[in-house]
Amino acid sequence: MLQYHIWKRYPNYLRKKIALCHEKIKNTRKDYLHKVSHEIISENQVIISENLQKKNMVKNHHLARPIIDVSWYELTRQLGYKSKWNGRKYIKIDTFYASSQICSACGYQNSDTKDLSVRTWICPKCGAEHDRDINAAKNGKRLSVKSIQKQMTIAPC
Image (cartoon, rainbow, N blue to C red; front, side):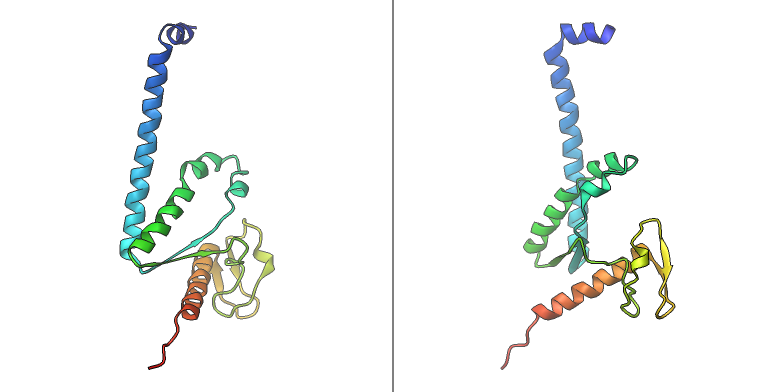
């Protein structure tokens, strides 16, 4: 009841105060993203990111707010233009590329690992043991190397 009376008496003051808090949060997040993207660009020649479906990830109610708060779009946007400024390669891997299902050792695609609860798996073809995330990173690296090799052409003398 007390909050109602305060809001009734000073509505513009409180709106401005809340707006300033939100602006400070926005600026802090933006500053952090600029620092992170600058560090990533300055330390690497090639940057690879997977284009994930955020709307499917937000369906998990425990992770919804942290996923929304991260500002992935802004980070990928900054990585895109900063990589062009600094002459770096920025490669986005397609959403539907089965990066965590393909064995990084032999190339076999294991469709049994589609479920996200499967964190580690053993390749039935070569017997290599894979962590889901590390395997996806290795496959992303291999895919980006292939795309860079396609782009490179040897000019005849």
